[in-house]
Figure 1 (cartoon, helix red, strand yellow):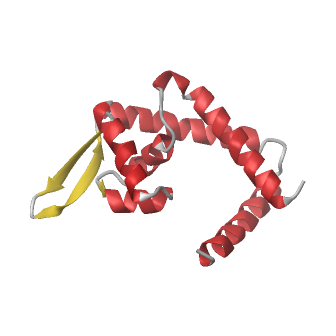
Figure 2 (tube, one colour):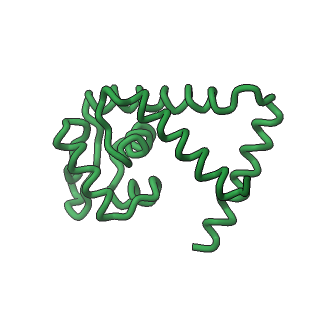
Amino acid sequence: MDYHQLMLENHTLFTKHVFHRLAPYALSSGQPRVLEYLARHDGAVQKDIAHACMIEPPSVTSVLSRMEKDGLIQRGAREGDRRSQYVTLTAKGKELAQRTLETFREEEESALGGLSGDETQTLLRLLEKINRNLKQTL
């Protein structure tokens, strides 16, 4: 297979596995990445979430609106800064974010199963290099 075929297929399969395991939570596309980001950067502004999760700003607005409706996040201004909306996880959102992080970790272990530690590190190093190359061309 060519690079693009392998990457698209790996992404599709990994995503299917993640969504299958998180099916009881009825997450929409984009929500697992946002939960992962907020688990590490709770209180982030919407612009930073969009950038880090590589989601277009109008799409992240939609994702966050649904998450707010579902009781996973809260949005609000910080004292002294009314220009920006800060996004924080609710208790329910923190619990689901942790479950999402566990799911990502377990699926990574499954996907990388059978690779030695050195092979895993080489793969990650090469993928980071490819990632940098692709980002430079945007």
